[in-house]
Length: 87
Image (cartoon, rainbow, N blue to C red; front, top):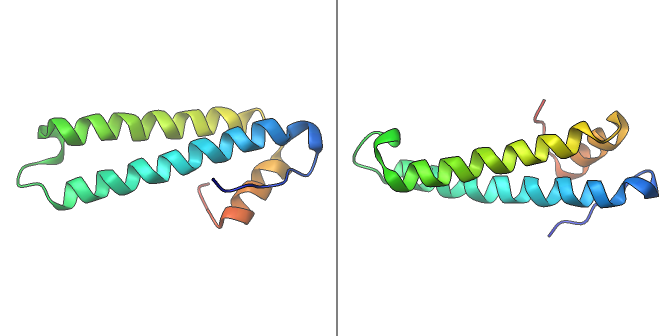
């Protein structure tokens, strides 16, 4: 798991939690893309795709919940360190 040092030490636990959910989101998203690329039918018709899509959405929602509890500078620190531009 990627470790990011928070700017303020009291936010470290929440930063770690946000990064954990972001990593899970990208893992699920990669699997979802792989399934989409190898389907013969529409995405929403596949039971496997729907299941992984649900997990992907849940992971991203959890990531956003963690971000909402963090100050803006911590949010920017996570995005800068990971190279993500989600906003």
